[in-house]
Image (cartoon, rainbow, N blue to C red; front, top):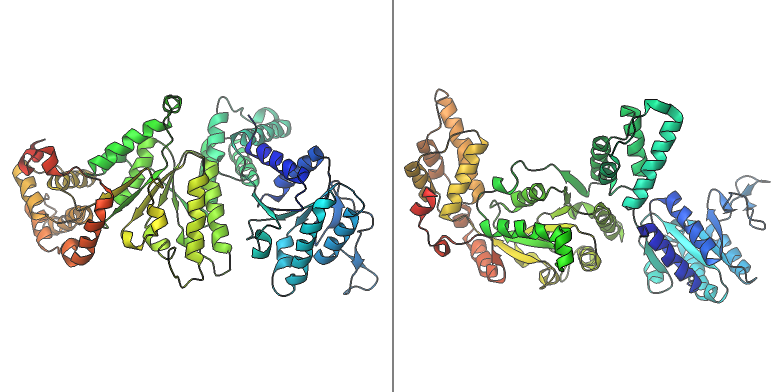
Length: 533
């Protein structure tokens, strides 16, 4: 089976043979992408050449191209400087008229298209986009994820996002690194000994240079390719861009979440769809869910718990961190973030409070349409992706969410989380006592606390235990009592009372979603009976 880069290379071959004049390739892995472009050019029968403002026009071997050696350096009389962008585009146009089949890879040309001075270069490139298809020459603009100028995006350039290395490519990188290490250090290097797949798992989501750096660090530190070293270094690299954060597993998984039985049962069922048997049966891979509800009722906690339960990484995506003051850069940042998630394979992508980060995506926004562009980038990825990442999105105020995000079929399910029922309040109390290593209260005491916390959110109930512990500690470090908890509860004004209007709006909206909790009445259990179970 071909790798992603091999598939993309085949697409470039087809585009060049189809006489597309200008390709715009987004990639931060310049060297790796260029190797594939050289192969694409040779496969298509085109001679590859390169240009940048420092090295000038060169062939594959780095030799100057005859007739394009340079131009007079205005700052150093008698010296030759590399060709500028406008000149090299003119000369490419002249060479194309000779009928030569050439593939020109232009590095960092996007910088020459900026500002008033870039108008001439932009116009020259657009003119070539019209004339080159008739000549057999193609131009590749190789840019590190830069936004394609609107005048080119309209049809003058074919845009390609070069994929990160997949498992097959990462395996080759690991094999090459191991062979080099053995050659340099001999028997001082410990063989992989069945750890190759684990090392690949650890490196998934990294660029080629990043993977090589992580592997090199592991060899230097351990004299072997240690998956745990690669994984730790990957966490640091992924977090370095500020848009993705690696979240550590939540101890206890879904059992650590009090209540939300319907949501938890659904998540347990959806995990089965990732199995080979499910795929053979024809089950679609789970896409994701949107969980809406009052703050402090377990939405974020559930996101952390499901990754633990499913035994896969939890990556938190910060759409707000992708914002930039530069036009088009916010969308580029989001595409880069989603590209990393795509390469990582089976992960849980946690998008927290999307109502805040995407609230300007529908209707007039004071951000120049940035929110709408971010939304469009996210929705396009959600529609087109084939990777198995599961999106766990949360929101507090659905009225601020764009309608497009709530469309039927966008998610596997929409969930609504309300304040906990009596049964759930008892579960939250029990889970919190266990967290603080305190014994459960007896039934009568638990029943009293459950009744006293009617209308409380899960967070408000959980916060009662540390509040009560401060009291018992100050009172001679004695054992915690139910009365301490009841006293702490009496001082709380529930959020549902202080934010009654917002709560009512949420509950009205909840008719569009599925309740995350089975109501106590539907269980045919009273509060007292629930406490006995």
